[in-house]
Image (cartoon, rainbow, N blue to C red; front, side):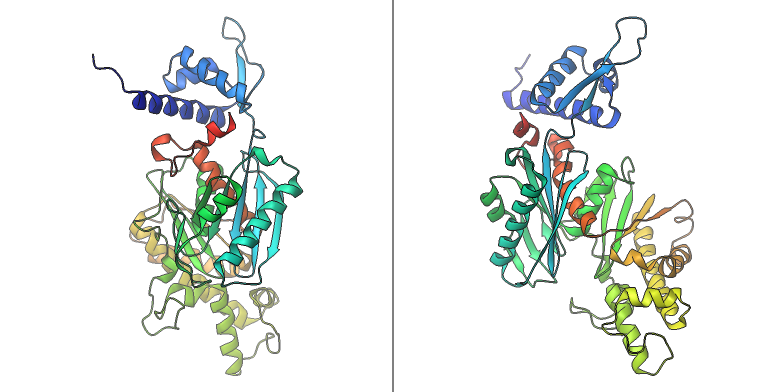
Length: 412
């Protein structure tokens, strides 16, 4: 019989470790016997792996379970405070950062103003300072921080740590992650901001255990994160999910991407504000006349107070958004759509018409059993999503890890 190569043995060992870790995370408190039964691993293998986890502090023994005739089994659960990660959401005017435990619970949240929006080095310095401040304020020992996740809008190659294009900052093909990794001596994971929310939903939220779902965000822009067959989908260049730039009308408003009539120019928060200003300039009767600076919150408040223009504009944005989401439904046939982002604050004035448009434009019966969940996303939620990029690497099977860094080994 051919000898098993050391590399193969190591990979099999890491696969088994990951399998046991995920059973403890998903089913804990759980006994070693139940892990062996569920995983089809031998009890000796499970006992060896869990002994390593207990020695590193990653897993706790927490009392005994019910006996099935013999000795009462000792139950195991994940020690969520065995390590911590930091998530960063890069915005146009600020950096939001959050430190979480291994269960994605936020221990501390911080927002740092961003004054120099064009200089890459200046932005990286602000991010480094924000991460340092977040760790210090949380009073977590630096050596217990396992990694940093960063989310930003644009086309991102997470594996290379590259930002290929940032619509807000004007960057093209810049190395973003490595200077920060060198500064902290930690793995730094870069990801599109909408994708960070999707990863968070897949590991810790409504998308956990769902094989086909989409996270659609509406706010300053419009984007989507995609999970297909249980696997997160980035596309060839990391640009999957830019459905905010579907062209819905060729003679529509100009978009920052250079085209006209993109979904983003018709349904995003700035689009609604722009449409309100245009209506006011044409003399439409509305309580929004004279409101400066005009914001989406002002328009929502006016709609709540019965303002017909505000109600119509929010409904129009919802219908356009629904048309875009129906296109995703027709292409991907998901089980679940999670709608998030700052624009969720528009409420049913926007999302009632959105649901109606999805039902109207989805092909045949594809929307009949589709679950639609509306979930707010503030600065803390975005930063938590970036942290979940790191946590996702911790629990991801070795064959799918995006980096060679073994986060579990770092905790030993």
